[in-house]
Length: 105
Image (cartoon, rainbow, N blue to C red; front, side):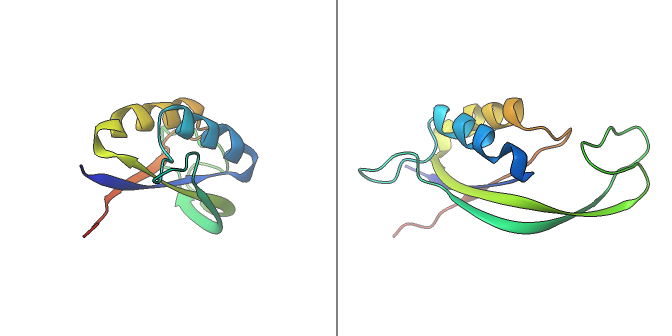
């Protein structure tokens, strides 16, 4: 079974909401444990293009802001439901959600 690492960038104010959605969709199981995740403080950078509606910042201006990176895992078959649950809970117009295949020998 293919396992995926999940990486999500989110403002600190929404970390718990996104983690709840992530785990409710089945992510975060590691062996005999559930609800496994890590949170890292990072600095996000972006520039909103004309026509976008940024959660933070202004169209056309390069922004820098503290965010949190949530990391967890899921089975590949769960990826679509995890992605949808996170998007529904996430405040950004374009949520950054990465799914990376894990090498597990």
